[in-house]
Image (cartoon, rainbow, N blue to C red; front, side):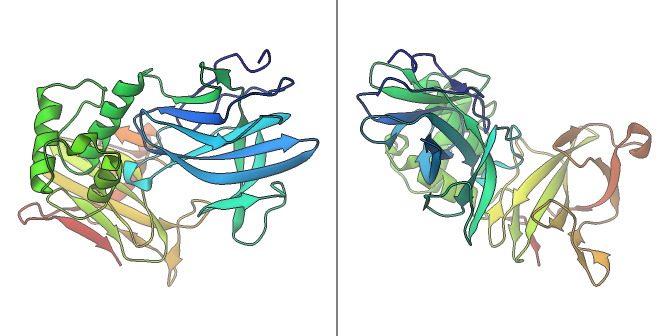
Amino acid sequence: MTNATIRCTVTLLAACAATIGLAMPASADLQICNRMSYVAETAIAVQERGAATSRGWFRVDPGQCRSVLQGVLTADEIFIYTRVNPVYGPTPVAQTGDVDFCVADGNFVSGGARNCRSGQRSVRFSAVKPSDNGQGPTVMLAEAAEYDDTQARDAGIQRLLVAAGYDASPVDGLRGEKTDAALRQFLIDNNLGLTAAGRSDFFDVLLDAAQKPGNAFTWCNDTSNLVMAAIGIEDRGLVMTRGWYRVEPGKCLRPDVTGQPKKLYSFAEAVDAAGRALQQSGKPLNWGGDAVMCTRSSKFEIMDQGDCAAKGLTSAGFAAIDLAGRNPTVRFK
């Protein structure tokens, strides 16, 4: 496999950009291996003799490999696009790529992958060059931490425990007393056996828990619009704002809040497919309050809330969250 032996590491949500030419056919299935701390869904596009086909979605859990193309690999070029569940909050790394192909929200196969049909949209895929790990051509999804398979699974569990309201931070792929305590409490709270973390469907359990309202603060989007939300966290007299979290229509999401903050604040706005703020009756369609704090248009984490404009930031009115009750939840209606 002389033209498919270079390892191709894919940073989170961005496949490495490399044009590939698979002159020698591979003898085993093409597989994708996930060494990220995120449950990933991938779509692939194959170009052969000028024709392009795309298909997806292939879910790959942290620490897992999955076959995505069976049989001899004869494609001239292969491209990949990766997405993660909105429960993770702000997109960790912006998607980059080389060529546009068609995808759909649900499972799909597109024979004319450059000409999107109804229900499809064009997204930017990245060219990849599979490596041969001894089991056939492989595309590796990885992030800066460079986890191995075991560490990726443990980091994936930590990340979803945090999203579900359990303090398993930091997300580092290292099992310690803090992670074990958070995991043990999660298993008890959900009436699961102590060995449930080893089950093949455990990431399904964690994803479900992270999307349901519970003891941790939760946003729920009851509208038909996409909502982008930001949170303010007051601890030791300082307020940090963080955003943006993507809350899909009809879904709930828990922002990554750990420890015992003194106060929480929330701001959110409905946006269109291009990310532009929506209006209703001539007014911005947003949910906030009187506490003025700083945000910016892109992903942010801001510690100083004074004089936002002087720092090139945007001011927004955040609402204080009542943490006195059980299940603090803000619903967008």
